[in-house]
Image (cartoon, rainbow, N blue to C red; front, side, top):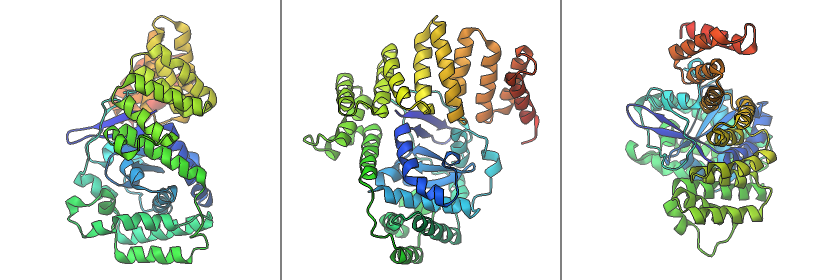
Length: 433
């Protein structure tokens, strides 16, 4: 399921897309690199930006933003692992301190809005993937914030090679990825990818990486077939979602593999071919009846096709298979709230799902918007106001966050955890930025 969060402003817009399946794959591939760097994977968040250009950057602490164009450009997981190891090199090297404190407590949408220099007028809460696109945001301010010196780039490259060797992984991926972009260094700036503009490439830098790869004891190590299959599914899902019109020539009609079927199914969903989409996802479920991601996609399809009540069952099946997945819980809760009407039990279940989701997704504005909606329908205005305050705080709308917290505090039980949280928000929003 793709949850789209649009960052908009006076210039252009970009979209963050959240997808549990792709994020799970990335976290699995990157885990050995996190481990050798003594990093807790739960503390490093991977955020996908729906953007056809190629780029990756770190912002707001240990948050690594990857453009979907970069994911689509890679031929195997090792190329992505190399890019990730490079970005972690910037974190461990202390290259990205500037502006960090202002972003650490923000939502991912607010971070991206700040980085691309368009303000932070965030429009979130759109669970429907259909019809939400993104436009390239090539602001000068954003590039200036992200650009790094060649010294930093070389340092991060060496850190990446060292990390991959320590993790006993093939470092060839970083080299092969950068070689794809090497010719862009000679092109006019407006024809270069964002990655080249914000990560200076030089022949000396690539030669140094090649030398490091040549010395590695793992340069011929094969990529696990499981990872290659995950990569095929990831690319198929992205192509179907972002470029549905390209699926027919990217996958031969005679290709009945799961990645090809996946791409066609997602494309049918995106282009509102309802019966084909539902037939495709049912075919995938029959082939892999325990695949939580297929149930999640079916739930999203049904909700977006206006069959919200029917979407609850597949969402629940997804949650049953991955109970700690915050995005699954958010999707299920949204369907429960939309179909609840006067059903207090459905609202209660939605709130319980959202409480679990809030622990897994502490930066999610959507969790708090849905909690505010659910509590509001229950008539619990104090808790509704508290979660509106939480949402506003993540969006860096401090005056509104303070106002809502103050209203909530008037009715919350004294010394309760909710009252203490409201006080915390008031104190935080009163401080100077």
